[in-house]
Amino acid sequence: MQHQAKGTFDVKMVPQADDTADVGRMTLDKTFHGDLEASSIGQMIAVRTPTEGSAGYVAMERVTGTLGGKKGSFALQHFGTMNRGKQHLRIEIVPDSGTDGLAGISGTLDIIIEKGAHSYVLDYTLPG
Image (tube, rainbow, N blue to C red; front, side):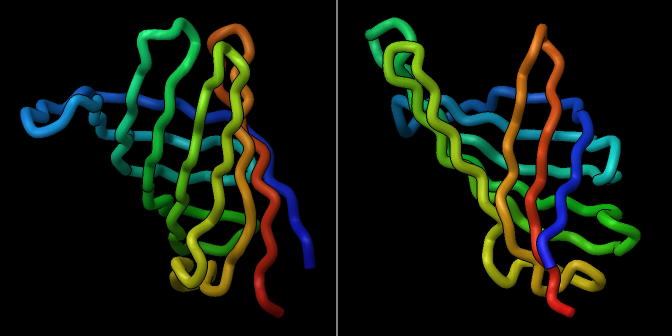
């Protein structure tokens, strides 16, 4: 059965030193509010180009909390690009990453940023 969760989240990104590559690396620390009450930790790797508005990033994060009354965790995989200001972002739940009450979860997460505030829409399915 298909479900949808909506809410807001706060994010703290901390740049990390990396002397081995010409990329930026950051830790992620998020708190989700709304239908998903959870926290997450993760890492992001990003590259900016000399062209204004063009960049790319990948990230992995582990989300732990309560979703639809079920406690557990799952992993999210991010793939994002900007092509001269046009953004493409795909965030998917990593297959078989769900634990406890969220075992077997699958789906996608959309991030909305309006006036500096972050919100999410999580479309997901759970077995049973």
